[in-house]
Length: 119
Image (tube, rainbow, N blue to C red):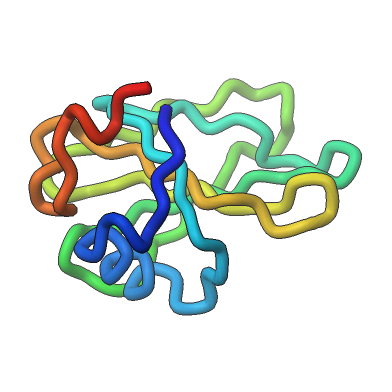
């Protein structure tokens, strides 16, 4: 996972604004994977994660609804086919930096290369 400044990636920045118009941070964290396993969707000392899927080229997101109990293991959310997993939430009482999980085949559609996402 790597943190990218949106000003350096205009295609990605434009897409993030379509997915989350109210997102005000200047960076996003990007992970390249074929699936994302949700964790931390329950409140835990001021922190909570919210997951959604989004289509590349589309606007808005489709929320992911977690299992009812935190002890229940969540099923992985697949990426690919122009679908990206978007994680937002609250960290220590403040808005968290957005994390995007992108399939390796979809990087170019967001103006990214594999080198951009390596640590």
